[in-house]
Every structure is written in structure tokens, then in C-alpha cells.
Amino acid sequence: MDRRDFLKSALVAGMALPQGLGRDQFRRREFREPVNPSRIPAYKSGILSIERFPELQREFDVIRKDGGLAAQKTFLQEVGALGFSVPREFPQAKSVVVVATFSKTMTVDFLVEGQARRVVIPPQYYRDALNAATLPAVVRGDILKSPGARVVDVTERVPLKLLAARSGLGRYGRNNMIFVDGLGSYCVLWAFLTDAPAPEDSWTALDVLEACRHCSHCDRACPTDCIPRGRFVIDAGRCITLYNENDGKFPNFILPSMHHALMGCLRCQTRCPENRGIGEVTASLGEVSSEETQKILDGRPDDALLASLRRTLAGFPPLEAAELFPILTRNLRALVRA
Ligand code: B12
Ligand code: SF4
Ligand code: SF4
Image (cartoon, rainbow, N blue to C red; front, side, top):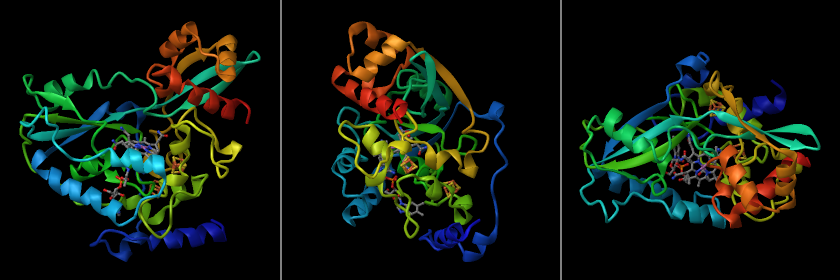
């Protein structure tokens, strides 16, 4: 550890942490044993009564009203669209089931001048076997064991991390992601309202991972310095993901060498000790031919290209609509020209 790292971790140890956790606990090293990849569950779930929604909403509002969030327009719009309200079409909702599905890192080989350029696709940007179409049946049959239950997907409407933490499904890490036992942070979160009552009150105190008290891997790995030392909430306005998920030019503080995924960014997860054994699990989605790669780089989508890409890169957001295609062109250019 050099002097800079030492000073940084000393500051990390002093960051604001929830009450009831004494300083003596910083001295304990409690890194997990690496997870055995064959033991990674497909999903885990938690459940909360809908009666907790007003409390969750108040909690989510505090940080916005205190000016604790990055003042970046797109980010504030994304967060502003979320909330804990019961949709008008489902007033009988009694509980919310929050699910974390294991999602491995994928790769795709783009052929450029005959050479394969392996490109990373992080969790969340491809369609897995457990998805919006298949999960309602899992919630009804396996989680609630109530085949007749009504299940409404509210994944796009609620702040999922707060829900996951308060339901006891996972804990926040210093990188502001949710870590679930056995899945680490390599999980996609989902939420479903149901008319089945929650069997018990699993309301859980907000807490940060024990391992974060003596670790600063994510902070040091973040290329754009989003993860602060003196406070918990990250500076989302500097996160690479915010810019490569949306259209437009990349800001100057994102240097060409910082791009490393077709969308999103994995730097604050890959070296996290809580992800040992999990983050290394990868698989391939396949190959994109030279001709197709050239069309993407030139920004010339045609029907045949879109149909082919929607097979190889199923679920990749910029393939959902033609007007989003420039995002794929820009992101791929950033990778193959770096
Ligand atoms: C907006 C958004 C973004 C923004 C902002 C991210 C952020 N940290 O807020 C951008 C575009 C930057 C982004 C990036 C990424 N995202 Co995103 N994003 C979202 C989205 C739509 C909303 C998140 C949100 O509510 N942010 C607002 C902040 C205020 O919420 P919060 O972080 O929960 O904040 C609470 C805590 O900070 C707590 N708190 C305050 N002080 C303290 C102190 C302590 C000690 C504790 C414990 C708590 C605490 O109070 C806050 C308010 O309640 C969700 C989907 C959804 N519907 O929820 C996905 C989601 C959070 N993203 C996700 C992912 C995977 C990512 C990326 C890894 C992208 C990628 N795959 O490459 C990066 C990770 C960046 C990072 N380090 O957080 C996953 C996270 C899964 C997980 N295991 O946590 C989600 C849940 C999508 C999904 N369906 O799975 N994302
Ligand atoms: S790398 Fe993981 S364990 Fe270390 S501080 Fe970040 S989130 Fe916590
Ligand atoms: S996703 Fe990348 S840019 Fe965003 S906080 Fe993590 S390391 Fe930093």
C-alpha cells in the first residue's frame, strides 16, 4: 500500500456510517471466502408489506430534498420518475416482492479487419433466462407459492436498491450498489406488487457492508472519481454509465482509455472482495461479422443488421428502437478506436 492509498483508506474509515457501529470494528478484516461459482443461486428474494411504502417514500425524498444528489439533469430525471406509490390499476396490492437475479458478465466478439475484438457486456444489458416475461411465474409459483396471486411488475417504477436493502435482501456497498449474499453485486433487481400478504415484517436497518469499513478498492478503481471519501452517496453526475447509456457526446472528463464495456462500467465491482468468485463468471453471446461491425461503426443500420443484432445482443437497450442505434455506434467506436 503506498502513501496515497494509506491516506485514502484512513479517510474511508472515517466516512459517515450508520449509528451503532463502533470504530473498533474497522480493525476487523472480514472479507468473505470466494464464492464457489457452481453454488451461485439463480435468484434470491425479499418481501415487504405495502404498508411500508409511505415510509420508503419519505426516506427516498430526504436525500433529494437535502440536495444530496448530483445536479445532473438526466440523472435527476431518471430518479424523479421513481417512487413508492401503489398504481391506480392495482389498489388491492398487499406486498412487494423484490428479486435479485444472478447476472454474469457477457462478452461479444466484434470482427474488425478480420480480428476479433472482445467487448464486455455487463449484467443488465442483455436478456437472461430470468427476465420480465419469466419472473412473474417464478414469483407466483416458487416465491409466494400462490399460483393464483396477481403479480404486477413495478421494476421500472420503484427505487429498487432502497427496497432491496429495507427488505433485508441485500446491503449497500460503498460503491452504492446492493450486495446480496452469494450473488455479490452481480445481480439485477426487480420488483413485483402482489395481492398476497407479506408473511412477516422483514423491515431491516440500513447498513453498509462490513467489508467496506476497511476497503477502498472501488473508490480507487473508479476512473472518474465518483466514489467520495467523506460521504456515502456517489457523484452519479461523473459516472461513465450515465453517459454511455444515453445519447450525446461524452464529457471531457471521460477519457478515451476509460471506456471498457459496450454499455455501463464494471470498474467499481470487478476488484471488490465481496465479488470474489462471482465477478469472474463470464460467458459469450457470440460473434458479430466484419460486415455487420462496419455497418455499426458507420452508423448504417438496416433491417437485416437489426434482426441479426437482436439475436446476438438480445435485450441490448440501443437495439430497442432505431433512434437509439447511434448510442451503439458511439459506444462501439469508443472501444474499437481506443
Ligand atoms: C439512476 C440509476 C443509475 C444512475 C445513478 C446510480 C446511483 N448510484 O444512484 C447511473 C446512470 C449513474 C447508474 C449507474 C449504474 N447502475 Co443504475 N440505476 C439507476 C436506477 C434507475 C435508479 C437508482 C436510484 O434510485 N438512484 C438514486 C439514489 C439516491 O438511490 P440510492 O443509491 O439507493 O440511494 C440511497 C442510499 O444512498 C441511502 N443512503 C443515504 N446515505 C446512506 C448512508 C449509508 C451508510 C447507507 C447504507 C445508505 C445511505 O439513501 C439513498 C436514498 O434512499 C436503478 C433502477 C431502479 N429502478 O431503482 C438502476 C440500478 C441501481 N442500476 C444498476 C446498475 C447495475 C448500475 C451500474 C453497475 C451499471 C452497469 N451495469 O454497468 C452502474 C453502477 C453505478 C454505481 N456505482 O452506483 C442496478 C443495481 C443492481 C445492484 N446490485 O445494486 C439497478 C438497481 C438496476 C436494476 N434493475 O438492477 N444507475
Ligand atoms: S470494493 Fe467492495 S468491499 Fe471494498 S469498499 Fe467497495 S463495495 Fe466495499
Ligand atoms: S460504474 Fe464506473 S464510473 Fe460509475 S461509479 Fe462505478 S467505477 Fe465509477
